[in-house]
Length: 309
Length: 309
Image (cartoon, rainbow over all chains, first blue to last red; front, side, top):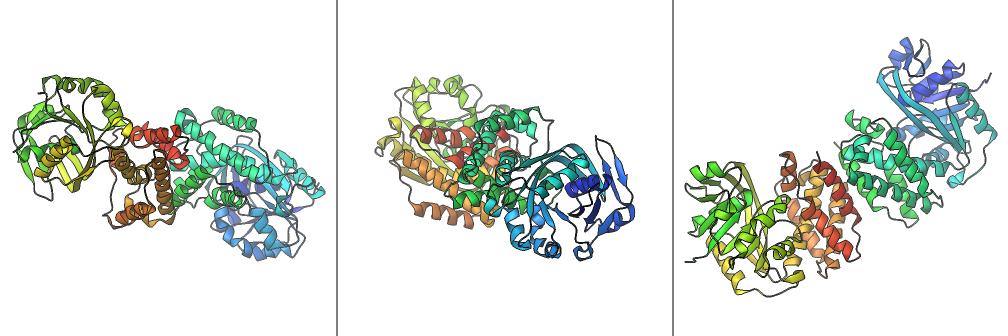
C-alpha cells in the first residue's frame, strides 16, 4: 500500500471526483474547499457514478491552505479562471518536497506553476472525464475518466517517464482511474486542444451541443478548419499531429452521446469561461513563433465578449 | 413633371417606403405584394416617419407580376433570400425597355439580373435607411434614407453617369430621397460591406447591438479585423478602399444611436438571413481571385448554422 498523501486544491467536479476515488482506495487525501467547506466538513462527499455510487462520510476538509499538511502530491484542480490565486495557494507546499500535478485545461500553466514553486517537480494531467458538481459535496460522474499525465520539463521539453510519475500513476490506477503516461506533455496538451478549441468555443458561441455542430455541414467544416489551426499551432512548437488524429477526433465526436461541453456548462451556469488557458495562451505561443491562427483568434474574441456578460 | 412609371417588386420596409414616397411625389407607382396584398389593396399604405407621417389610401396593388403594367423602372426591393423568384418575376418586364434598379444588399445580384433580363439597363442602389414594416401596409421609417446608385456594366466595370441614371435620380430627389450617384457600383457595394459584414454578422452571432460591439475591446478589434478583410476582398477586385474609410466607419458607428442591425432584426423575427448575398458571394469573388478571407469565412459558416434554426 502506498503511503503518499494528496492535497486536492479545488474540490469541484474534477478534484472532488478524483480525490474521493483516491481516498476510497485508502490513500491519505486532504481537500481544500471554499464555498462548500462547512457542508463537506460536516457531511463528507457523495459521488454518483455509473461505475458505482459511494459516500465518504468523513473527509479531511480545509478552507485555509496554510492549515493543510505538506502533502507529497499537490493536485491542482481549480478552474484556470481562479489561477490568480496560485501565488497564494502553492508556496505553502513548495517549502516541502511536494510534487505538483496540474489537472487543468489549456496550455502554459505548468510554466507558471514552476515559476511559483521553484525547483520542484511539476506534472501535468489531461482529464478525459464528464463530471459535474450538482450540489455541495455532491459530484455526479457521467462518463470516462482517463488521465494522460506527463512530467513538465523547462520550456516543455520532452523527457522521460520518471520514477515519481510512475508512482503517482500507480496511485491513480489503484483508485480505478485509467492512466496514460506521456513523455511529451506539450504534445498531449496540444492534442487535447484539437478537441477543446472547436467544440468548447463553438458550443458557447452558437449555443449548440456536439451533435448539432457535427450534423450541420457548415459547422462541421468549421470544426475541422479550427482543428487544422490547432495542428498549425502545435507545429509552431515543433509538435507534429498527424491528419489521422483529426479524422479520429471527428469520428469519435460523431459517435459520442450528444454532449454539452464543459465551457458551455460554465456559460449556462454563468461561471467565468476558461478563455485564456484554452484559447489565449495557445494563440500567443503560436504568435510568438510567427504563426497566425485567424479563426481561433476570432473565436477567442467572441468568447471574451460573451464572457463579459 | 416626370412621366416615368415605377414597379416596386417587394413592398416591405424598403420597397414600401421608397415606393410610397415616389407615389406621394406624384409618380405612377405599382406595387407587387404577397401576404399583404388584400390588406393593402383595400387600405393602402401608411408611412410613419420623423420626416412626416403620411397615408396613401389608394395604391396600385398586385399579387401577380403578370398583371402589372410594363413600367419604365422596375425596382427590386425583395430580400435577397427571395432571389430564387427572380426568374419568374423579371422576364415580364424585360419584354419592355424597362430599367431594372436593384435595391438589395450584398454583391453579385446585378450580374444575375443582367443574365435574366438580357440586354436591358441594370442599375444598383445601396440604401442607407432604417425602416421596418410593423404591420400590413404599415411602414415605420426611423432614420436616414440616402441611396447611392450606379449603373451596372458587364463584370462590374466602371462607367459613366448615364442619362437614365440621372433621370431616375431626379425622380427620387423629387420624392425627397437624397441620392448619391457613383460611376463605380462595385466599389460602392464593397464599401457598404465594410459596415455590413462585421456589424450584421457579429450582431447575430453574439446577440448584440452596435453599441455593445463597440464598447467591448475584443469585439471592437474583431470588427476592425473583419473590415480589413473586406478591404482585402475589394482589393481582389482592384477596388481600393483607403484606411481612412475604416476609421470613418468606426467613428460613425461610435456616434450612432445603439442599433439593432437589419440581419439581427431578421434573426429575431425568425426570417431567413441574407447570408449568401452579404457573406457568401463576396467570399467566393475574393476566393476566385486567390484571396482567402478567413474570419469572414468563419462568420459565414456560423451564420449559416444559425440560419438553419
